[in-house]
Image (cartoon, rainbow, N blue to C red; front, side, top):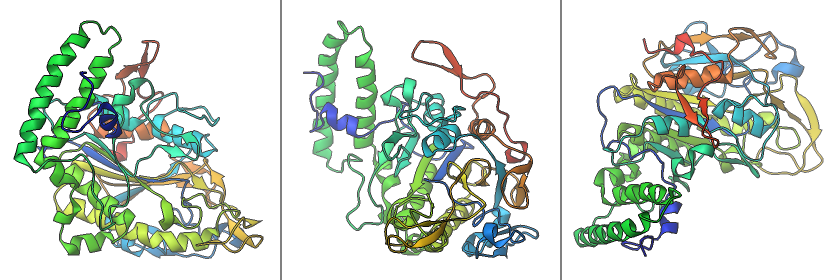
Length: 456
Protein backbone atom coordinates (compact mmCIF):
# COMPACT_ATOMS: atom_id res chain seq x y z
CA UNK A 1 0.00 0.00 0.00
CA UNK A 2 2.78 2.37 0.90
CA UNK A 3 4.34 2.08 -2.55
CA UNK A 4 1.27 2.69 -4.69
CA UNK A 5 0.70 5.96 -6.45
CA UNK A 6 0.06 9.37 -5.03
CA UNK A 7 -1.27 11.98 -7.45
CA UNK A 8 -1.09 9.35 -10.17
CA UNK A 9 2.54 8.36 -9.49
CA UNK A 10 3.33 4.67 -8.99
CA UNK A 11 6.72 3.34 -7.98
CA UNK A 12 7.43 2.48 -11.61
CA UNK A 13 6.60 6.07 -12.56
CA UNK A 14 9.03 7.35 -9.98
CA UNK A 15 11.73 4.98 -11.15
CA UNK A 16 11.18 6.18 -14.69
CA UNK A 17 12.11 9.65 -13.49
CA UNK A 18 15.65 8.24 -13.24
CA UNK A 19 16.22 10.28 -10.11
CA UNK A 20 19.66 11.08 -8.84
CA UNK A 21 20.50 9.76 -5.40
CA UNK A 22 21.98 13.03 -4.40
CA UNK A 23 19.39 15.09 -2.67
CA UNK A 24 17.90 17.56 -5.17
CA UNK A 25 19.95 20.52 -6.33
CA UNK A 26 19.53 24.22 -5.60
CA UNK A 27 16.79 26.27 -7.12
CA UNK A 28 19.07 29.20 -7.88
CA UNK A 29 22.69 30.01 -8.46
CA UNK A 30 24.52 30.80 -5.24
CA UNK A 31 28.02 32.17 -4.79
CA UNK A 32 30.83 30.30 -6.46
CA UNK A 33 29.33 26.81 -6.37
CA UNK A 34 31.20 25.03 -9.18
CA UNK A 35 29.50 23.09 -11.96
CA UNK A 36 30.47 21.10 -15.04
CA UNK A 37 28.85 20.63 -18.44
CA UNK A 38 30.21 17.60 -20.31
CA UNK A 39 29.60 17.40 -24.06
CA UNK A 40 30.29 13.78 -25.01
CA UNK A 41 31.12 12.83 -28.62
CA UNK A 42 30.06 9.19 -28.61
CA UNK A 43 32.27 7.06 -30.81
CA UNK A 44 35.38 9.25 -30.66
CA UNK A 45 35.96 12.31 -32.84
CA UNK A 46 39.06 12.69 -34.97
CA UNK A 47 41.55 14.94 -33.21
CA UNK A 48 43.27 15.57 -36.56
CA UNK A 49 40.28 17.34 -38.10
CA UNK A 50 39.25 19.23 -34.96
CA UNK A 51 41.79 20.41 -32.37
CA UNK A 52 45.16 18.88 -33.36
CA UNK A 53 45.64 19.41 -37.09
CA UNK A 54 48.81 18.15 -38.79
CA UNK A 55 49.04 20.11 -42.08
CA UNK A 56 52.69 19.16 -42.62
CA UNK A 57 52.06 15.41 -42.52
CA UNK A 58 51.82 13.40 -45.72
CA UNK A 59 48.45 13.09 -47.47
CA UNK A 60 47.86 9.58 -46.16
CA UNK A 61 47.79 11.10 -42.67
CA UNK A 62 46.60 14.68 -42.83
CA UNK A 63 43.52 14.33 -45.05
CA UNK A 64 42.03 17.05 -47.26
CA UNK A 65 41.18 19.71 -44.66
CA UNK A 66 43.34 22.65 -43.67
CA UNK A 67 43.70 24.29 -40.26
CA UNK A 68 42.50 27.84 -39.73
CA UNK A 69 43.89 30.54 -37.47
CA UNK A 70 42.07 31.52 -34.29
CA UNK A 71 41.87 34.79 -32.40
CA UNK A 72 44.82 33.58 -30.30
CA UNK A 73 48.12 33.81 -32.22
CA UNK A 74 49.72 30.42 -32.69
CA UNK A 75 46.57 28.35 -32.08
CA UNK A 76 44.98 26.68 -35.10
CA UNK A 77 41.98 24.36 -35.30
CA UNK A 78 40.09 22.56 -38.06
CA UNK A 79 38.57 24.52 -40.92
CA UNK A 80 35.03 23.37 -40.10
CA UNK A 81 35.11 25.12 -36.71
CA UNK A 82 35.11 28.81 -37.73
CA UNK A 83 32.92 29.99 -34.83
CA UNK A 84 35.12 28.28 -32.26
CA UNK A 85 38.15 29.81 -33.98
CA UNK A 86 36.82 33.27 -33.06
CA UNK A 87 36.67 32.53 -29.32
CA UNK A 88 39.88 30.54 -28.73
CA UNK A 89 40.74 33.02 -25.98
CA UNK A 90 37.88 31.50 -23.99
CA UNK A 91 38.98 27.86 -23.99
CA UNK A 92 42.06 25.72 -23.56
CA UNK A 93 42.95 22.69 -25.67
CA UNK A 94 44.47 19.60 -24.10
CA UNK A 95 46.16 17.67 -26.93
CA UNK A 96 47.94 14.85 -25.14
CA UNK A 97 45.36 12.52 -23.60
CA UNK A 98 46.24 8.84 -23.99
CA UNK A 99 45.07 5.51 -22.56
CA UNK A 100 44.83 1.80 -23.39
CA UNK A 101 41.11 1.31 -24.05
CA UNK A 102 40.93 0.57 -27.77
CA UNK A 103 37.25 -0.45 -27.86
CA UNK A 104 34.35 1.94 -27.35
CA UNK A 105 33.29 0.38 -24.01
CA UNK A 106 36.82 0.18 -22.61
CA UNK A 107 37.74 3.65 -23.85
CA UNK A 108 34.57 5.14 -22.37
CA UNK A 109 35.07 3.37 -19.04
CA UNK A 110 38.65 4.61 -18.85
CA UNK A 111 37.72 8.26 -19.52
CA UNK A 112 34.46 8.36 -17.57
CA UNK A 113 35.31 6.11 -14.62
CA UNK A 114 39.08 5.59 -14.52
CA UNK A 115 38.91 1.85 -15.19
CA UNK A 116 42.41 0.96 -16.46
CA UNK A 117 41.41 -2.42 -17.92
CA UNK A 118 41.96 -2.36 -21.72
CA UNK A 119 39.26 -5.00 -22.28
CA UNK A 120 35.67 -4.17 -23.16
CA UNK A 121 33.02 -5.00 -20.54
CA UNK A 122 29.28 -5.39 -20.96
CA UNK A 123 28.74 -3.40 -17.78
CA UNK A 124 31.10 -1.15 -15.82
CA UNK A 125 32.65 -2.20 -12.52
CA UNK A 126 33.41 1.36 -11.38
CA UNK A 127 30.89 4.21 -11.10
CA UNK A 128 31.35 7.07 -13.55
CA UNK A 129 32.63 10.43 -12.30
CA UNK A 130 29.23 12.07 -12.72
CA UNK A 131 27.53 9.78 -10.21
CA UNK A 132 30.53 9.84 -7.87
CA UNK A 133 30.60 13.62 -7.84
CA UNK A 134 26.83 13.78 -7.45
CA UNK A 135 27.01 11.61 -4.32
CA UNK A 136 29.59 13.94 -2.76
CA UNK A 137 27.65 17.08 -3.67
CA UNK A 138 24.24 15.99 -2.41
CA UNK A 139 22.31 18.61 -0.48
CA UNK A 140 18.84 17.98 1.05
CA UNK A 141 17.93 21.65 0.76
CA UNK A 142 17.92 21.75 -3.02
CA UNK A 143 14.83 21.39 -5.17
CA UNK A 144 16.05 20.00 -8.51
CA UNK A 145 18.52 17.18 -9.22
CA UNK A 146 22.21 17.96 -8.93
CA UNK A 147 23.04 15.63 -11.85
CA UNK A 148 21.04 15.83 -15.07
CA UNK A 149 21.75 13.94 -18.29
CA UNK A 150 20.32 15.61 -21.41
CA UNK A 151 20.42 12.80 -23.97
CA UNK A 152 22.30 10.66 -21.47
CA UNK A 153 25.68 8.99 -21.73
CA UNK A 154 24.74 5.41 -20.94
CA UNK A 155 25.17 2.83 -23.70
CA UNK A 156 27.21 1.96 -26.75
CA UNK A 157 25.21 -0.65 -28.66
CA UNK A 158 24.57 -3.39 -26.06
CA UNK A 159 27.40 -2.23 -23.78
CA UNK A 160 26.74 -0.03 -20.75
CA UNK A 161 29.45 2.65 -20.70
CA UNK A 162 28.38 4.70 -17.68
CA UNK A 163 26.39 4.31 -14.51
CA UNK A 164 26.50 4.25 -10.70
CA UNK A 165 27.44 0.53 -10.25
CA UNK A 166 27.90 -0.03 -6.50
CA UNK A 167 26.61 3.43 -5.65
CA UNK A 168 23.17 2.00 -6.44
CA UNK A 169 20.39 2.87 -8.90
CA UNK A 170 19.24 5.84 -6.86
CA UNK A 171 22.48 7.60 -7.88
CA UNK A 172 21.43 7.62 -11.53
CA UNK A 173 21.10 10.91 -13.33
CA UNK A 174 17.78 12.55 -13.89
CA UNK A 175 17.48 11.76 -17.60
CA UNK A 176 16.01 14.08 -20.20
CA UNK A 177 15.14 12.09 -23.31
CA UNK A 178 13.97 13.16 -26.73
CA UNK A 179 14.73 16.13 -28.95
CA UNK A 180 14.53 19.49 -27.12
CA UNK A 181 14.10 21.17 -30.51
CA UNK A 182 10.86 19.31 -31.26
CA UNK A 183 7.78 21.58 -31.13
CA UNK A 184 5.97 19.26 -28.70
CA UNK A 185 8.99 18.55 -26.50
CA UNK A 186 8.46 18.62 -22.77
CA UNK A 187 10.13 17.06 -19.76
CA UNK A 188 7.50 14.89 -18.01
CA UNK A 189 6.82 14.97 -14.27
CA UNK A 190 8.26 18.47 -13.81
CA UNK A 191 6.11 21.01 -11.98
CA UNK A 192 2.39 21.22 -11.30
CA UNK A 193 0.48 24.41 -12.04
CA UNK A 194 -2.87 23.42 -10.48
CA UNK A 195 -3.10 24.46 -6.80
CA UNK A 196 -5.84 21.91 -6.05
CA UNK A 197 -3.69 19.16 -7.54
CA UNK A 198 -0.80 20.26 -5.32
CA UNK A 199 -3.06 20.04 -2.26
CA UNK A 200 -4.14 16.51 -3.19
CA UNK A 201 -0.51 15.53 -3.84
CA UNK A 202 0.60 16.76 -0.42
CA UNK A 203 -2.28 14.97 1.30
CA UNK A 204 -1.50 11.69 -0.43
CA UNK A 205 2.18 12.10 0.28
CA UNK A 206 1.45 12.42 4.01
CA UNK A 207 -0.78 9.34 3.94
CA UNK A 208 1.88 7.41 2.09
CA UNK A 209 4.51 8.39 4.68
CA UNK A 210 2.32 7.01 7.47
CA UNK A 211 1.76 3.75 5.64
CA UNK A 212 5.47 3.41 4.86
CA UNK A 213 6.32 3.60 8.56
CA UNK A 214 4.54 0.29 9.06
CA UNK A 215 6.62 -1.34 6.32
CA UNK A 216 9.82 0.20 7.64
CA UNK A 217 9.49 -1.63 10.94
CA UNK A 218 9.95 -4.96 9.17
CA UNK A 219 12.30 -3.77 6.41
CA UNK A 220 15.85 -4.93 7.05
CA UNK A 221 17.14 -4.53 3.47
CA UNK A 222 17.30 -0.75 3.15
CA UNK A 223 14.83 -0.83 0.27
CA UNK A 224 12.55 1.64 2.02
CA UNK A 225 15.35 4.17 2.35
CA UNK A 226 16.04 3.92 -1.38
CA UNK A 227 12.35 4.34 -2.15
CA UNK A 228 12.28 7.44 0.04
CA UNK A 229 14.94 9.07 -2.11
CA UNK A 230 12.97 8.42 -5.29
CA UNK A 231 9.79 9.67 -3.63
CA UNK A 232 11.37 12.82 -2.27
CA UNK A 233 12.76 13.86 -5.62
CA UNK A 234 9.48 13.04 -7.35
CA UNK A 235 7.67 15.34 -4.92
CA UNK A 236 10.28 18.07 -5.28
CA UNK A 237 10.12 17.98 -9.06
CA UNK A 238 6.34 18.09 -9.09
CA UNK A 239 5.96 20.89 -6.55
CA UNK A 240 8.95 23.13 -7.30
CA UNK A 241 8.17 25.85 -9.88
CA UNK A 242 11.88 26.62 -10.25
CA UNK A 243 12.43 23.09 -11.58
CA UNK A 244 9.77 23.59 -14.23
CA UNK A 245 11.37 26.90 -15.23
CA UNK A 246 14.89 25.46 -15.50
CA UNK A 247 13.82 22.86 -18.07
CA UNK A 248 11.56 25.18 -20.10
CA UNK A 249 13.37 26.31 -23.26
CA UNK A 250 10.35 28.30 -24.41
CA UNK A 251 11.35 30.96 -21.89
CA UNK A 252 14.46 31.75 -23.93
CA UNK A 253 14.31 34.51 -26.59
CA UNK A 254 14.16 33.28 -30.16
CA UNK A 255 17.47 34.99 -30.86
CA UNK A 256 19.20 32.90 -28.19
CA UNK A 257 17.66 29.65 -29.39
CA UNK A 258 18.67 30.53 -32.94
CA UNK A 259 22.24 31.26 -31.87
CA UNK A 260 22.60 27.78 -30.35
CA UNK A 261 21.02 26.21 -33.45
CA UNK A 262 17.47 25.03 -33.93
CA UNK A 263 18.47 21.39 -33.75
CA UNK A 264 18.87 18.75 -31.08
CA UNK A 265 22.51 19.46 -30.17
CA UNK A 266 22.02 23.19 -30.00
CA UNK A 267 18.98 22.95 -27.76
CA UNK A 268 20.67 20.31 -25.58
CA UNK A 269 23.47 22.79 -24.93
CA UNK A 270 20.99 25.58 -24.22
CA UNK A 271 19.19 23.40 -21.70
CA UNK A 272 22.54 22.54 -20.11
CA UNK A 273 23.26 26.25 -19.61
CA UNK A 274 19.82 26.82 -18.10
CA UNK A 275 20.31 23.91 -15.71
CA UNK A 276 23.69 24.99 -14.34
CA UNK A 277 22.35 28.50 -14.00
CA UNK A 278 19.49 27.06 -11.92
CA UNK A 279 21.96 25.31 -9.62
CA UNK A 280 22.53 21.86 -11.15
CA UNK A 281 26.10 20.76 -10.45
CA UNK A 282 26.63 18.31 -13.29
CA UNK A 283 25.07 18.22 -16.75
CA UNK A 284 26.13 15.57 -19.24
CA UNK A 285 24.89 15.75 -22.82
CA UNK A 286 25.71 13.41 -25.69
CA UNK A 287 26.13 14.43 -29.33
CA UNK A 288 24.93 11.54 -31.48
CA UNK A 289 21.93 10.60 -33.59
CA UNK A 290 20.97 11.77 -37.10
CA UNK A 291 23.14 14.89 -36.85
CA UNK A 292 26.16 12.59 -36.99
CA UNK A 293 25.32 10.95 -40.32
CA UNK A 294 24.41 7.41 -41.35
CA UNK A 295 25.63 5.47 -38.31
CA UNK A 296 24.58 8.23 -35.89
CA UNK A 297 27.82 8.50 -33.95
CA UNK A 298 31.45 9.62 -34.37
CA UNK A 299 32.80 6.15 -35.18
CA UNK A 300 34.18 7.03 -38.59
CA UNK A 301 35.52 3.72 -39.86
CA UNK A 302 35.45 3.62 -43.64
CA UNK A 303 33.01 0.71 -43.45
CA UNK A 304 30.61 3.02 -41.57
CA UNK A 305 31.01 6.43 -43.16
CA UNK A 306 33.21 8.56 -45.38
CA UNK A 307 35.16 10.19 -42.58
CA UNK A 308 35.65 13.55 -44.26
CA UNK A 309 32.09 13.78 -45.56
CA UNK A 310 30.84 12.88 -42.09
CA UNK A 311 32.98 15.54 -40.41
CA UNK A 312 31.95 18.14 -43.00
CA UNK A 313 28.33 17.26 -42.26
CA UNK A 314 28.41 17.33 -38.45
CA UNK A 315 31.16 19.73 -37.39
CA UNK A 316 29.26 22.93 -38.32
CA UNK A 317 26.44 21.88 -35.97
CA UNK A 318 28.90 21.17 -33.16
CA UNK A 319 30.68 24.44 -33.91
CA UNK A 320 27.51 26.47 -33.56
CA UNK A 321 26.21 24.72 -30.45
CA UNK A 322 29.46 24.61 -28.47
CA UNK A 323 30.58 28.13 -29.39
CA UNK A 324 27.16 29.48 -28.35
CA UNK A 325 27.37 27.60 -25.06
CA UNK A 326 30.84 28.96 -24.28
CA UNK A 327 29.89 32.52 -25.24
CA UNK A 328 26.73 32.31 -23.16
CA UNK A 329 28.57 31.00 -20.11
CA UNK A 330 30.85 34.03 -20.26
CA UNK A 331 28.13 36.54 -21.15
CA UNK A 332 26.00 35.46 -18.19
CA UNK A 333 28.85 35.60 -15.68
CA UNK A 334 29.00 31.86 -15.15
CA UNK A 335 32.56 31.39 -16.38
CA UNK A 336 34.22 31.48 -12.95
CA UNK A 337 32.28 28.49 -11.69
CA UNK A 338 30.98 26.57 -14.74
CA UNK A 339 33.48 24.45 -16.68
CA UNK A 340 32.53 23.18 -20.15
CA UNK A 341 34.32 20.05 -21.39
CA UNK A 342 34.10 18.59 -24.90
CA UNK A 343 35.52 15.12 -25.53
CA UNK A 344 34.84 11.55 -26.59
CA UNK A 345 36.44 8.29 -25.56
CA UNK A 346 39.47 8.54 -27.89
CA UNK A 347 40.84 10.03 -31.11
CA UNK A 348 41.08 8.41 -34.55
CA UNK A 349 43.92 6.71 -36.37
CA UNK A 350 46.30 9.23 -37.94
CA UNK A 351 46.81 6.99 -40.98
CA UNK A 352 43.74 7.05 -43.21
CA UNK A 353 42.26 3.66 -44.10
CA UNK A 354 40.26 2.74 -47.21
CA UNK A 355 37.52 0.12 -47.00
CA UNK A 356 34.29 -0.63 -48.86
CA UNK A 357 31.22 1.04 -47.39
CA UNK A 358 28.65 -1.23 -45.75
CA UNK A 359 25.77 0.96 -46.87
CA UNK A 360 24.82 4.29 -48.38
CA UNK A 361 23.28 7.24 -46.59
CA UNK A 362 24.20 10.60 -45.14
CA UNK A 363 28.02 10.86 -45.28
CA UNK A 364 28.45 7.37 -46.70
CA UNK A 365 28.75 6.16 -50.29
CA UNK A 366 26.62 3.26 -51.57
CA UNK A 367 27.48 -0.20 -50.28
CA UNK A 368 30.64 -1.59 -51.82
CA UNK A 369 32.16 1.82 -52.60
CA UNK A 370 35.68 2.17 -51.26
CA UNK A 371 35.89 5.27 -49.06
CA UNK A 372 38.28 6.78 -46.48
CA UNK A 373 37.97 6.30 -42.75
CA UNK A 374 39.83 6.65 -39.49
CA UNK A 375 39.73 3.90 -36.87
CA UNK A 376 39.98 3.81 -33.07
CA UNK A 377 43.04 5.51 -31.59
CA UNK A 378 43.37 5.62 -27.78
CA UNK A 379 47.03 6.68 -28.09
CA UNK A 380 46.07 10.33 -28.64
CA UNK A 381 43.02 12.46 -28.06
CA UNK A 382 42.21 16.16 -27.68
CA UNK A 383 39.84 17.75 -25.17
CA UNK A 384 38.42 21.26 -24.95
CA UNK A 385 38.00 23.05 -21.59
CA UNK A 386 36.22 26.41 -21.25
CA UNK A 387 35.20 28.53 -18.30
CA UNK A 388 35.79 27.13 -14.84
CA UNK A 389 37.91 30.15 -13.91
CA UNK A 390 40.92 28.63 -15.70
CA UNK A 391 43.45 30.54 -17.76
CA UNK A 392 42.21 30.11 -21.32
CA UNK A 393 43.71 30.73 -24.74
CA UNK A 394 46.41 28.11 -24.23
CA UNK A 395 47.50 24.68 -25.45
CA UNK A 396 48.46 21.89 -23.05
CA UNK A 397 50.59 19.05 -24.38
CA UNK A 398 51.47 18.03 -27.92
CA UNK A 399 51.51 15.00 -30.18
CA UNK A 400 54.14 14.07 -32.75
CA UNK A 401 54.19 15.27 -36.35
CA UNK A 402 51.58 12.69 -37.39
CA UNK A 403 49.34 13.00 -34.36
CA UNK A 404 50.10 9.44 -33.29
CA UNK A 405 51.44 9.80 -29.74
CA UNK A 406 51.97 12.50 -27.12
CA UNK A 407 55.48 13.93 -27.10
CA UNK A 408 54.91 16.30 -24.18
CA UNK A 409 52.62 16.37 -21.15
CA UNK A 410 51.02 12.96 -21.61
CA UNK A 411 47.76 13.00 -19.63
CA UNK A 412 45.89 9.93 -18.38
CA UNK A 413 42.17 9.50 -17.71
CA UNK A 414 43.02 9.52 -13.99
CA UNK A 415 44.53 12.99 -14.40
CA UNK A 416 41.40 14.08 -16.26
CA UNK A 417 39.16 12.80 -13.45
CA UNK A 418 41.33 14.41 -10.78
CA UNK A 419 40.97 17.73 -12.62
CA UNK A 420 37.19 17.42 -12.64
CA UNK A 421 36.97 16.54 -8.96
CA UNK A 422 39.27 19.37 -7.99
CA UNK A 423 37.13 21.86 -9.92
CA UNK A 424 34.05 20.57 -8.08
CA UNK A 425 35.80 20.96 -4.73
CA UNK A 426 36.11 17.21 -4.03
CA UNK A 427 39.31 16.03 -2.34
CA UNK A 428 40.27 13.43 -4.92
CA UNK A 429 43.50 12.51 -3.10
CA UNK A 430 41.70 11.27 -0.01
CA UNK A 431 38.06 10.64 -0.96
CA UNK A 432 36.81 7.08 -1.38
CA UNK A 433 33.52 5.25 -1.81
CA UNK A 434 32.42 1.83 -0.57
CA UNK A 435 32.13 -0.98 -3.13
CA UNK A 436 29.74 -3.94 -3.04
CA UNK A 437 31.95 -5.65 -0.47
CA UNK A 438 31.88 -2.60 1.77
CA UNK A 439 35.52 -1.81 1.11
CA UNK A 440 36.66 1.77 0.43
CA UNK A 441 37.75 2.45 -3.17
CA UNK A 442 39.63 5.68 -4.01
CA UNK A 443 37.76 7.85 -6.46
CA UNK A 444 41.04 8.45 -8.37
CA UNK A 445 43.90 5.97 -8.73
CA UNK A 446 47.34 7.37 -9.63
CA UNK A 447 46.04 10.64 -11.02
CA UNK A 448 47.02 14.27 -10.51
CA UNK A 449 44.92 17.29 -11.42
CA UNK A 450 46.28 19.23 -14.40
CA UNK A 451 47.80 22.48 -13.00
CA UNK A 452 46.91 24.62 -16.04
CA UNK A 453 43.25 23.77 -15.54
CA UNK A 454 43.12 25.19 -12.03
CA UNK A 455 40.93 28.17 -11.31
CA UNK A 456 43.16 31.22 -11.75
